[in-house]
Length: 426
Image (cartoon, rainbow, N blue to C red; front, side, top):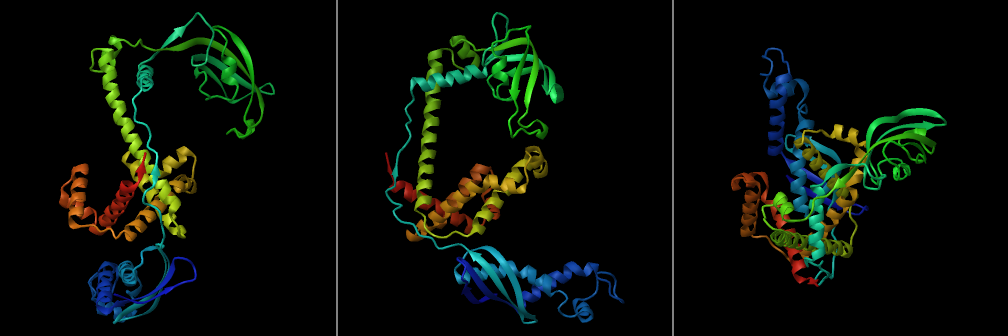
């Protein structure tokens, strides 16, 4: 396989490659196709699936297996041609066979390639690091969250409803004096202040007491999901049966013993300080990385092919589909449940995909400018880390992750480490 010609087209990052596949490679591909298809071919005088290749070619023409064989050859041939032309193909727009015969075949490919980008001033980036100080307010906030998780609902009888309460109600809704479908329920537990009901509904329940029967008036939003109710005025008749309030545990030694393995409140607070300190440090480091990423994206110059964004979106959708399957759900069911189609799903990932593509290009450009190289030791270290992380044998990791692909990832990480090491982090 060899690159015969590489021509840059008028469109940015578009090339036309003319590639030849030698006779030996083409013949191997033809033979592989023959072995797959011969089982389905009936030839008089031979048992089904046993007719020699030369007999089939004599009957149907020597080109009988060409198309399928060429399809099998295209990926490797394009890969080798791209390496020879020193370009990275990100999308194939068209393939056209020019000539084919026993000596091989030649084809023309219109491709989109990874762009050549520019980036400057990436050393010495000004970065402001988030505070990692563990304050008393943060510790109190942590304790409040634990109290919330250990709260219980108790019945209230000596006061009217307040925001934050749960009101157990019967209700029935009317539009123009006529009940509407889905507007009635009995013994419904409504969390007041949650905003789960029509605007104005929960607010008008506040202030009422157990045993009261009353009416409230609301207006359905113009974008309400039920078209027949959009923008309509409605009256709801309500009966309040019960008021429940959240009761939080007292913060004392007994509470500490219930929620941790510590004996006293002071011991618990010390443990929380360590936990919060570790979390703040991790959050600060991630924020530094995010700031660096954003600044590198801003500094990146060049025209990025739309195909690179599409490829990244598709990769992210495939990853999400695999996660769904691991949880026992398929993509079709998920989209039906969420009320979205494939275009909406892709739109959900679009912004993050664009950021990933730009950051990757920025770091690859930096790696090129800095002549960053990846050694065998670097690769071995990375394979070892992956094996430990996934609890797999190193050889199995190597078989699953090609060295060339991993080398690119390590090189990009080295570029990020360089930028971070030279940044002015305050």
